[in-house]
Image (cartoon, rainbow, N blue to C red; front, side, top):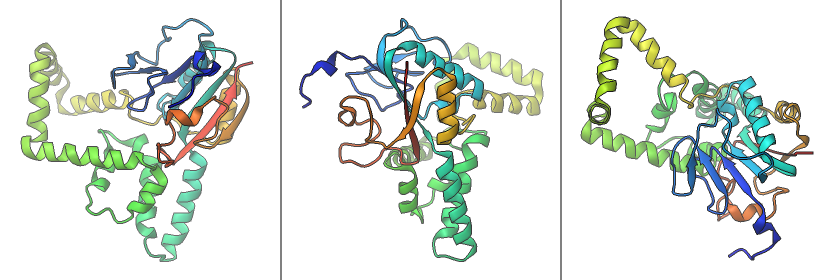
Length: 287
């Protein structure tokens, strides 16, 4: 157990926490993902006063905002921090993705064993979450393979997050086999939202099939799953500076200026493994 210290009086905020949160922090997400999570639309101003927090952290959130909206979000983080406060940001690392893709391309083209699958993975990793038109996109088909031929490579790329995602997707597939995905989703929606069903039927009749399908794709792409922008250490540093922060610097998953960072197990697991190994981690300071 962590010893009590002056740092326990500091206030820490985790935005877009998902299922990765700590009870000593203020945790906020779009949806209720746990008993310690406050529900709030992060596209809107947060319900906290200026200078409330000593630390603001968000992991794999920024890339889901369009570029200019991401800047507004970083400025909101700036507003929330006290002078001298620290922001910590984790995003997919565009530089590492690009370099690993080029390595996979060269080795696959040279016939190196196993690198054909690694090349396929890297192309999907770069593009799937920017172009997909339904949840999980091409990833669902890739994770349907049993066994996944390059699982060690996937774990190296995505860390322990990949284990949880694979388990979740396979459990979903089992439920859909028993109930049927269309019937399961349809009946749940009908029972919980009868007026929405009627509205949808009217819209579908007005829009015809092509218009209706386009509407569904548009709704999905605005729902938050899509990656709207990508960052390397240079562009993320510039974005942090534009938002008002100073001294942006890349750090490791367990490296931080945040007191007792490693005790919270947000970017690393208790056994020391990295949760999202594909991440770029950066910290900066509010003057």
